Length: 225
Image (cartoon, rainbow, N blue to C red; front, side, top):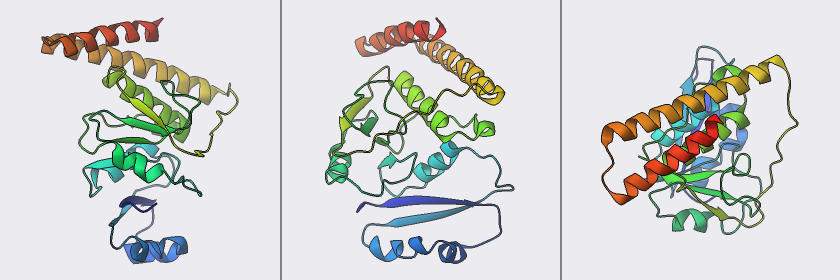
Protein backbone atom coordinates (compact mmCIF):
# COMPACT_ATOMS: atom_id res chain seq x y z
CA UNK A 1 0.00 0.00 0.00
CA UNK A 2 1.63 3.24 -1.14
CA UNK A 3 -0.56 5.75 0.64
CA UNK A 4 -0.18 7.32 4.10
CA UNK A 5 -0.74 4.94 7.02
CA UNK A 6 -2.11 5.68 10.49
CA UNK A 7 -1.10 2.67 12.61
CA UNK A 8 -2.27 2.07 16.18
CA UNK A 9 -0.41 -0.49 18.29
CA UNK A 10 -2.09 -1.45 21.55
CA UNK A 11 0.00 -2.68 24.49
CA UNK A 12 -0.45 -3.15 28.22
CA UNK A 13 3.28 -2.83 28.95
CA UNK A 14 5.11 0.48 29.54
CA UNK A 15 7.06 1.09 26.36
CA UNK A 16 8.02 3.60 23.67
CA UNK A 17 7.83 3.67 19.88
CA UNK A 18 11.35 2.31 19.36
CA UNK A 19 10.78 -0.63 21.69
CA UNK A 20 7.56 -1.47 19.89
CA UNK A 21 9.28 -1.40 16.51
CA UNK A 22 11.99 -3.76 17.78
CA UNK A 23 9.33 -6.22 18.91
CA UNK A 24 7.78 -6.19 15.43
CA UNK A 25 10.63 -6.43 12.90
CA UNK A 26 8.19 -6.24 9.97
CA UNK A 27 7.37 -2.68 11.06
CA UNK A 28 11.00 -1.53 10.97
CA UNK A 29 10.90 -1.03 7.21
CA UNK A 30 7.68 1.01 7.24
CA UNK A 31 9.21 4.41 8.17
CA UNK A 32 11.65 4.21 5.23
CA UNK A 33 9.09 2.74 2.86
CA UNK A 34 6.55 5.45 3.63
CA UNK A 35 8.86 8.36 4.42
CA UNK A 36 7.63 10.34 1.43
CA UNK A 37 3.97 9.50 2.06
CA UNK A 38 3.66 9.70 5.83
CA UNK A 39 3.55 6.96 8.44
CA UNK A 40 1.77 7.89 11.66
CA UNK A 41 2.63 5.36 14.35
CA UNK A 42 0.59 5.59 17.57
CA UNK A 43 1.25 3.47 20.66
CA UNK A 44 -1.84 3.13 22.84
CA UNK A 45 -1.06 1.92 26.35
CA UNK A 46 -3.98 0.19 28.08
CA UNK A 47 -4.35 -1.12 31.62
CA UNK A 48 -5.09 -4.67 30.48
CA UNK A 49 -4.59 -6.60 27.25
CA UNK A 50 -7.88 -8.42 27.89
CA UNK A 51 -10.93 -7.06 26.13
CA UNK A 52 -10.79 -3.81 24.24
CA UNK A 53 -12.80 -2.72 21.27
CA UNK A 54 -11.44 -3.22 17.76
CA UNK A 55 -13.75 -0.43 16.62
CA UNK A 56 -12.27 1.89 19.26
CA UNK A 57 -8.76 1.31 17.90
CA UNK A 58 -9.96 2.00 14.35
CA UNK A 59 -11.57 5.20 15.61
CA UNK A 60 -8.27 6.25 17.19
CA UNK A 61 -6.36 5.55 13.96
CA UNK A 62 -8.94 7.58 12.04
CA UNK A 63 -8.84 10.46 14.52
CA UNK A 64 -5.04 10.71 14.31
CA UNK A 65 -4.74 10.13 10.55
CA UNK A 66 -2.81 12.88 8.69
CA UNK A 67 -5.25 12.99 5.74
CA UNK A 68 -8.70 14.45 5.04
CA UNK A 69 -10.03 11.08 3.91
CA UNK A 70 -9.33 7.68 5.44
CA UNK A 71 -9.88 4.03 4.63
CA UNK A 72 -10.55 1.73 7.58
CA UNK A 73 -9.24 -1.83 7.27
CA UNK A 74 -11.02 -3.82 10.02
CA UNK A 75 -9.00 -6.97 9.33
CA UNK A 76 -5.69 -5.34 8.44
CA UNK A 77 -4.17 -4.91 5.00
CA UNK A 78 -4.41 -7.99 2.74
CA UNK A 79 -1.10 -9.68 1.96
CA UNK A 80 -1.61 -9.21 -1.76
CA UNK A 81 -3.13 -5.87 -2.69
CA UNK A 82 -5.06 -5.31 -5.88
CA UNK A 83 -3.55 -2.99 -8.47
CA UNK A 84 -6.67 -0.81 -8.46
CA UNK A 85 -7.07 -0.58 -4.67
CA UNK A 86 -5.20 2.70 -4.26
CA UNK A 87 -6.82 4.23 -7.34
CA UNK A 88 -10.27 3.27 -5.99
CA UNK A 89 -9.47 5.12 -2.77
CA UNK A 90 -8.07 8.17 -4.54
CA UNK A 91 -11.10 8.44 -6.85
CA UNK A 92 -13.48 8.46 -3.91
CA UNK A 93 -14.64 12.05 -3.42
CA UNK A 94 -18.17 11.40 -2.20
CA UNK A 95 -19.16 12.84 1.19
CA UNK A 96 -20.74 9.45 1.92
CA UNK A 97 -18.83 6.30 2.91
CA UNK A 98 -17.61 3.95 0.18
CA UNK A 99 -17.34 0.22 0.87
CA UNK A 100 -14.52 -1.69 -0.85
CA UNK A 101 -14.95 -5.35 -1.69
CA UNK A 102 -15.89 -7.85 -4.35
CA UNK A 103 -18.90 -8.15 -6.62
CA UNK A 104 -20.79 -10.51 -4.32
CA UNK A 105 -22.51 -7.75 -2.32
CA UNK A 106 -22.94 -4.23 -3.63
CA UNK A 107 -25.46 -3.11 -1.01
CA UNK A 108 -26.16 -3.75 2.68
CA UNK A 109 -25.51 -6.28 4.15
CA UNK A 110 -22.02 -5.96 2.74
CA UNK A 111 -19.43 -8.72 2.67
CA UNK A 112 -17.87 -9.40 6.10
CA UNK A 113 -14.89 -7.24 7.07
CA UNK A 114 -15.24 -4.95 4.04
CA UNK A 115 -13.00 -1.83 4.32
CA UNK A 116 -14.65 1.59 4.19
CA UNK A 117 -13.44 4.88 2.70
CA UNK A 118 -14.90 8.00 4.30
CA UNK A 119 -14.06 11.61 5.17
CA UNK A 120 -12.00 11.83 8.33
CA UNK A 121 -14.56 14.22 9.85
CA UNK A 122 -17.60 12.14 8.83
CA UNK A 123 -20.08 12.56 11.70
CA UNK A 124 -20.55 8.83 12.37
CA UNK A 125 -17.97 6.93 14.40
CA UNK A 126 -18.04 3.16 14.88
CA UNK A 127 -19.81 2.01 18.02
CA UNK A 128 -17.47 0.81 20.77
CA UNK A 129 -19.98 -0.67 23.19
CA UNK A 130 -19.34 -4.36 22.50
CA UNK A 131 -15.73 -4.65 23.71
CA UNK A 132 -16.76 -7.30 26.26
CA UNK A 133 -17.31 -9.92 23.56
CA UNK A 134 -14.01 -9.52 21.67
CA UNK A 135 -15.49 -10.22 18.25
CA UNK A 136 -13.86 -8.08 15.60
CA UNK A 137 -16.18 -9.32 12.84
CA UNK A 138 -19.39 -8.62 14.80
CA UNK A 139 -18.09 -5.22 15.93
CA UNK A 140 -17.43 -4.29 12.30
CA UNK A 141 -20.80 -5.65 11.18
CA UNK A 142 -22.47 -3.24 13.60
CA UNK A 143 -20.29 -0.39 12.30
CA UNK A 144 -21.36 -1.09 8.71
CA UNK A 145 -24.98 -1.22 9.84
CA UNK A 146 -24.52 2.07 11.68
CA UNK A 147 -23.07 3.76 8.58
CA UNK A 148 -25.94 2.42 6.47
CA UNK A 149 -28.51 3.83 8.91
CA UNK A 150 -26.90 7.24 9.38
CA UNK A 151 -26.39 7.72 5.64
CA UNK A 152 -30.02 6.75 4.94
CA UNK A 153 -28.85 4.00 2.61
CA UNK A 154 -26.50 6.29 0.66
CA UNK A 155 -23.38 4.23 1.33
CA UNK A 156 -21.82 3.24 -1.99
CA UNK A 157 -19.83 0.12 -2.87
CA UNK A 158 -17.13 -0.56 -5.43
CA UNK A 159 -15.47 -3.78 -6.52
CA UNK A 160 -11.71 -4.14 -6.10
CA UNK A 161 -9.87 -6.61 -8.32
CA UNK A 162 -9.09 -9.95 -6.65
CA UNK A 163 -10.40 -8.79 -3.29
CA UNK A 164 -10.33 -11.75 -0.83
CA UNK A 165 -13.70 -13.21 0.10
CA UNK A 166 -14.19 -13.47 3.87
CA UNK A 167 -16.67 -16.17 4.74
CA UNK A 168 -18.95 -15.80 7.74
CA UNK A 169 -18.36 -18.29 10.50
CA UNK A 170 -20.86 -20.93 11.49
CA UNK A 171 -23.66 -19.85 13.77
CA UNK A 172 -22.50 -19.85 17.39
CA UNK A 173 -25.16 -20.85 19.88
CA UNK A 174 -23.08 -20.41 23.03
CA UNK A 175 -24.49 -18.33 25.87
CA UNK A 176 -21.97 -15.57 25.09
CA UNK A 177 -23.01 -15.49 21.42
CA UNK A 178 -26.69 -15.39 22.33
CA UNK A 179 -26.05 -12.52 24.74
CA UNK A 180 -24.05 -10.70 22.06
CA UNK A 181 -26.95 -11.03 19.59
CA UNK A 182 -29.40 -9.68 22.16
CA UNK A 183 -27.13 -6.69 22.77
CA UNK A 184 -26.94 -6.09 19.01
CA UNK A 185 -30.75 -6.11 18.73
CA UNK A 186 -31.01 -3.68 21.65
CA UNK A 187 -28.27 -1.42 20.24
CA UNK A 188 -29.92 -1.23 16.82
CA UNK A 189 -33.31 -0.48 18.33
CA UNK A 190 -31.76 2.33 20.41
CA UNK A 191 -29.85 3.69 17.39
CA UNK A 192 -33.05 3.76 15.35
CA UNK A 193 -34.99 5.48 18.14
CA UNK A 194 -32.25 8.12 18.48
CA UNK A 195 -32.10 8.71 14.71
CA UNK A 196 -35.87 9.18 14.49
CA UNK A 197 -35.99 11.46 17.54
CA UNK A 198 -33.14 13.57 16.19
CA UNK A 199 -34.88 13.92 12.83
CA UNK A 200 -38.11 15.01 14.52
CA UNK A 201 -36.32 17.62 16.62
CA UNK A 202 -34.49 19.04 13.61
CA UNK A 203 -37.75 19.17 11.60
CA UNK A 204 -36.52 18.29 8.13
CA UNK A 205 -37.55 20.91 5.59
CA UNK A 206 -35.66 20.04 2.39
CA UNK A 207 -36.73 17.29 0.04
CA UNK A 208 -33.51 15.36 0.71
CA UNK A 209 -34.01 15.53 4.50
CA UNK A 210 -37.63 14.41 4.21
CA UNK A 211 -36.61 11.56 1.92
CA UNK A 212 -33.92 10.46 4.40
CA UNK A 213 -36.43 10.63 7.26
CA UNK A 214 -38.88 8.38 5.40
CA UNK A 215 -36.08 5.97 4.50
CA UNK A 216 -34.94 5.66 8.13
CA UNK A 217 -38.52 5.26 9.29
CA UNK A 218 -39.06 2.33 6.91
CA UNK A 219 -35.64 0.81 7.62
CA UNK A 220 -36.07 0.99 11.39
CA UNK A 221 -39.52 -0.55 11.12
CA UNK A 222 -37.88 -3.52 9.37
CA UNK A 223 -35.25 -3.69 12.11
CA UNK A 224 -37.92 -3.94 14.81
CA UNK A 225 -40.00 -6.54 12.96
